[in-house]
Length: 183
Image (cartoon, rainbow, N blue to C red; front, side, top):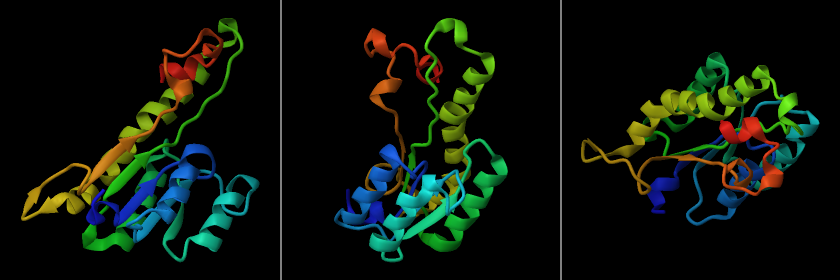
C-alpha cells in the first residue's frame, strides 16, 4: 500500500483474534499508520481488553487509540465516529477493517434459536454496514485527490474480514456454526 493509504486506520473487534493481529501487524508495517483506532466492545480494564491495553501501552507509541464500540448500537457507532473525526480532521480515514463478529456454536440443529440467529445477523452482517455508513464521510475525505473521489487501496478502502470457519464450504464437522455461517 502506498504511504497515503495507511495514514489513518480503524479496526473493529481488536481485543483478540484477527483484529488484535491486524493492529499488531500495523504497528510494525512500513509505512506505519499515523493513527490506529482499535475498537473493543468490553470496557477497558477488563480481562478481555488487557492484551490490547498492554499492546497500546508498550508498542503503540501514542498511535493506538482505544475506542469502546458496539457495532450493533447506533449511538456507540456515532460516538466512535466523532472520536475518529476529532483525531484525523481533514485527512479523513484511509482504511476501515470491519472485523467484529460473534460466533456461538450450536451442537445440533434442534438447539438453534431465532434469537441466536438474529444476534449473529445483527453483529456480523448489519454491524459492518452501519460502520461503513457512519465512516463513509471520513473515507470520502481521504479518497479525494485533485477534487475527485478516488476510492481504492491507494487512498481509501473498506475491508470486510471473515474467517475460514465462516465459510459455507468448510467440512461437515464445522456445520454446527449454523448462525455464524449464515450471517
